[in-house]
Length: 308
Ligand code: ATP
Image (cartoon, rainbow, N blue to C red; front, side):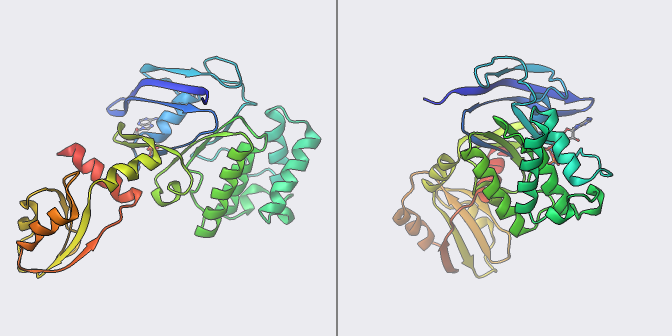
């Protein structure tokens, strides 16, 4: 059985008027790729900052147990942190910055330089090694920030919005780098609002909205739960009031983004033939398509269900 290396219980944090984190609990096992997912202002960064002791929670417990050391916060050599507000000195040369970041996390100077050069070559930035960070484009600065946070191959990497500022090609490359880091032994905790990227990488997810848990568990279980419920996209002559669909037997959730189209999620356990029988009673339907939910849709549905 995998070892728990971080356990968080009932964490809460309020800033003056904003209740940013509301009693959330989760844990990470060694080797996890765990993603915090949620819209802007959901409480992701606040939670990560609390874990790193940058800010204090109002209540709740955090227990670390990394590399056999149980303590309030592991040594900096064991942790890698990519902050949301990028924190490197913009007027220092790229290579010097990376070597410095490695050295303060316990690497030998020569080892840090070798590792930094390896990364710069990989990122096609080796020719910029002696230029100041501020001369690089935003995406390239982000790459350097990423390397700075993981150059020492930390046992635990906390990556706050690692894909921010990257084009789609580089986003894919970063997914590869993070997976590689994980394969080499780092446990990963990342935050993102880009669900289509997280879907490709995370094994465990924590969906958060307005500081509260929306879903927490294995990514596969989200799809499993939603697969047991059929969602259909129904097109209809738009003289028909949309409300017709809300009152259909078994229709639990109806969303209409376009005129003449409605996405209906039917009650869990309802079979396709039962659903077809219900829809057969509506005259003006012009088309029916099965809708395969992605994480984005599932998240929106879950938030909607929480409200109702
Ligand atoms: P984003 O994706 O936009 O970074 P997030 O999920 O990381 O969002 P947080 O940065 O954790 O969200 O913010 C959660 C809430 O707490 C927001 O309403 C934010 O305005 C508020 N907040 C965060 N830090 C502070 C602070 N230092 N003082 C006051 N309010 C704060």
